[in-house]
Image 1 (cartoon, rainbow, N blue to C red):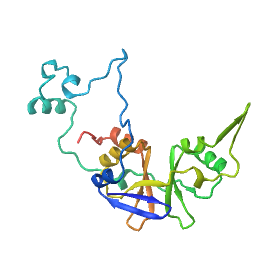
Image 2: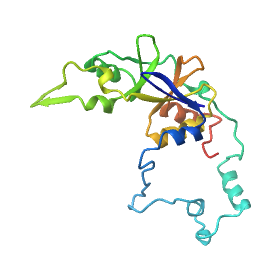
Image 3: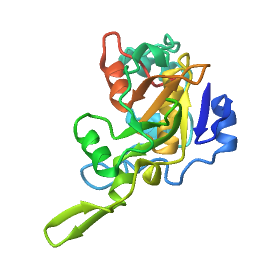
Image 4: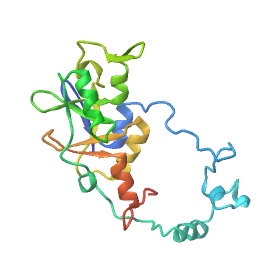
Amino acid sequence: MFAIYDVQGRRFRNTLEHLQKVRATQASQRASLRSDGGEQAPQNLAEQTGDRTADHHPLSYDARQAYLDILHIKEREAVVHAYQLMSHPVITVPLALDIPVAWQRFREQPYHQLPVLDRQQRIVGILSERDLLRFLVTDGEQISFVPGKAVADAMTSEVITADPVTDVRRIAHVMLSYHLSAVPVVDEQDALIGLVSRSDILRAVTSEPPLSLWT
């Protein structure tokens, strides 16, 4: 399950399919993969396996299964949920924090997006380094930020979150669709309990046994 929060609180909570209906995905979801020679990388299984005879016909089940067996990929993988790999406790930024201080907070930790909390510790937005760069001012060799601005002026005022029991594959899909580097994890009481980042998913993919994102 996924939810959307803003300064007014939670305004949506439903499945991935309903999320896609209420919030359109951003353009350019996927960048084209290129090979070293500049040509577009293979886009289907036939090209990846070098089977040029199947350019216009799907591979048979046996051929596909053989390919998966080579990679040691099973058709049905165990489901990994958000709470099993999320980072916690979560690094956050207050709504009223000055932008220069917020920028320094990004410099001190590995995340590129951080949840924003109000005085009641409710999640009200998401802040990225890119958001802060819009307030950067250069004067010759001097670099500073627009004075008098706070996180509330820079943040994205709605944030997509996931329930603790959400398939990590579906979270990865949301990250790709909405160009997110992290998804906060919020429980049914609207409490922020964790954060799933791209790094968390990559660690799961490369762990032993690895998480497969094929399914």
